[in-house]
Length: 314
Image (cartoon, rainbow, N blue to C red):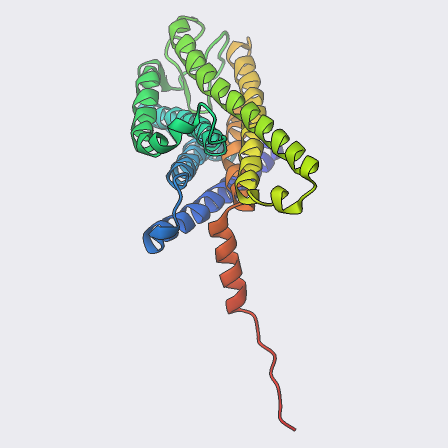
């Protein structure tokens, strides 16, 4: 085991700990508010909770094999382990993509004006939320059933040609590029949901720009702060989508290169996994910025440990 592998393994361990703890903490706060204070819940809360759950599963299934490989653990996954872990990893990452797209579309419709053509969807959107979760899981399971059929435990350590290669797993027929239909299906899914993210984000940017111009025209601070919680949440969603798009295209570039590279590099797939987990790791901390549940928790927590001044009678 080389020193670079140890450093990379420590980096992946820190990413795993930060991502799992951040998503789990925010998920538990949402669950507590959902159960104890149901009158304060919002329609967007189930979407955020679903996204946090998908993020935790993606980070665990993606990083644990890479961590064990970086630390020199051999034969960590057999054939069944490879198929199970890679299938669940791809499915949860796909669910995270779909849920982020739903979150951006939900926020765009929520902040749309009452006279907008999207106003009629506001009341129907909450009814479609939970069926959408089931649709996302079924859709991605059907897409990635190909992984179970095409992946096996690694057999040859000198792999040459196009194909998926991991420290423990590889494609069955390495070097034969015969899964074009699978890539087309994945590409269509990504295009649909990523374009929905981008379109809804551009629509929210347009609404924020109009609101700012109207506030400057009226010269009233009351107008600029009237809907500040909604606009603050909108800016958070825009930042979230921006981070997702950046890491999505970065990861796809590395994955495309490692798949088609003539000689395989052991760390290329680990780097792809680290890039895939950057968005799920950062996601909860971006959501905490404008999250009322986290703000209430930190406020109450700080009040409990605030020492009141003691006065003495003279």
